[in-house]
Image (cartoon, rainbow, N blue to C red):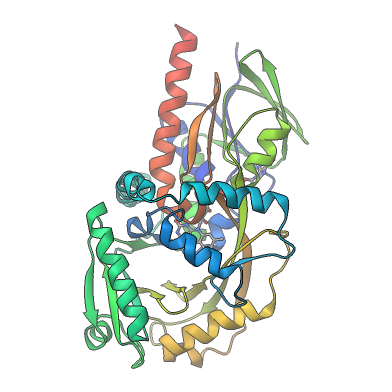
Length: 406
Ligand SMILES: Cc1cc2nc3c(=O)[nH]c(=O)nc-3n(C[C@H](O)[C@H](O)[C@H](O)COP(=O)(O)OP(=O)(O)OC[C@H]3O[C@@H](n4cnc5c(N)ncnc54)[C@H](O)[C@@H]3O)c2cc1C
């Protein structure tokens, strides 16, 4: 009797959702991860944002990105010295930023993001698992007229990609969001965006997978045992796990791991990000998810807490603690935009982790071997795209499995 099942390498939001879809379809699933639900998938901003689906590789970000190479306080920074790996990633990013490409591919990502929000809600309802999706929209608040003008122009262009948006005066924004500062001169609101508490969401998806029989093995995948084009087992530091199919969803470690396994995956670079989570009650926190247009800081309040995120650093060691000043900057922006947050005296909980960035800004979900699929490289959009990605990965695997049993 064949006791092998589908092995999912990686228990972040992408691996968790793939495991859920496969287990729900009746597959026997094993998730292999030394520390499931602990990386970027838990420390992120928790935004489900079809509005943010224009790939970063576009002409506007390219010029801002190049400017940031020479600026000390840009939202995007590069660890010095810039390594050959970062330079090679940048070269591919420059090519992918050619005019016209991002707007051609964005509508599919926007649609995947919208479908994913519905899917999270369906999962919560179907499985009876607490996963609260707040359909609060996302309000981008500007404190300077110049930033508001530039942002409104960029947001207007998103309409052509299928993103709904509205512009608000400072006063209208304050009516919409409690505790918003008098310094806000205007805002762009994306009504179709939503927010979750990412830690609870990632754990909820893992629980839903477990409810359908998925097992989690706390181990590090170190190799594959193959029979030609097919994987027969995944080698881990805790022993070999028989596999009749494999999903590789190891986040920013996917390319390095794939190379070690002798497989080719487009370069996924780690872009370090950080967040600060503060305890906050409704007398302090905004009731709509916000972004500071001037400083690119995101403020997302969920039950009893507010999470601040912003900034991205390429190169260097993504596991190394960022300097205290990056957390101070998050807090300074949040206190300015939502003055009631200044009353919080707690130091908050710091997080840092890496976004898995492809140079093209597009995730990689495709077959790697006869019975192995990769699902990784979601950059700043992993929470937003996980359910739609899992649907695609499960479809690809099921096609493979059907073929092999014919
Ligand atoms: C500060 C910040 C803010 C963000 N905000 C948002 C947001 O608001 N909305 C949004 O959509 N996205 C956001 N993102 C991006 C999002 O967090 C990522 O795209 C997403 O978490 C990637 O999920 P993943 O499962 O691919 O990777 P991870 O969450 O990194 O999970 C990968 C897992 O693989 C495991 N693993 C690695 N190597 C091995 C191995 N050899 N064997 C077994 N397991 C292994 C790891 O332990 C890890 O648990 C943000 C990211 C950051 C850092």
